[in-house]
Image (cartoon, rainbow, N blue to C red; front, side):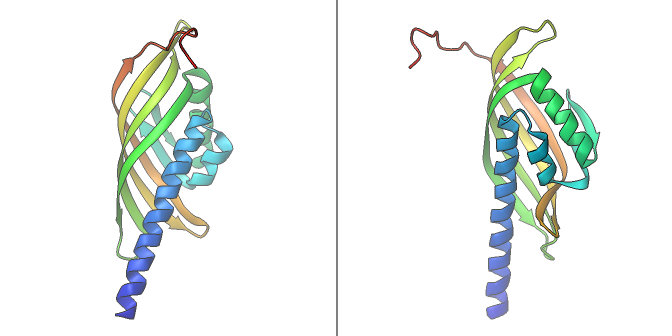
Length: 158
């Protein structure tokens, strides 16, 4: 009984720590993909990929490329990661998570004009339990829909 309880607590703790990594990833995204914060969430040989954005391999390259996207393409965002489904391996060393993303964005087009959008997407992500905690190993962002919306005119906004 004690061993079962210890395993359950370890699994719950792992899932909560992974949720924390997901939340910190979203927060770093809202800070124009803050490269210093992103590096903290990735293992050295991590992979990040998304159709339309690219596939980047290695912690430093991922942090650099995501920061470029934050400066040049998605210039403002508010991420809402929703209901992660987390499957933790029996040995508590790896995990896989799926979650939905609802995001408000301001995107800069090729001509430099900025447009406000709603973005709907999903994530598939493999995690590894490193010496300093759970880290992202391989993340795949699948953007499903980007829909423009009109900002509230300043005379109406609070």
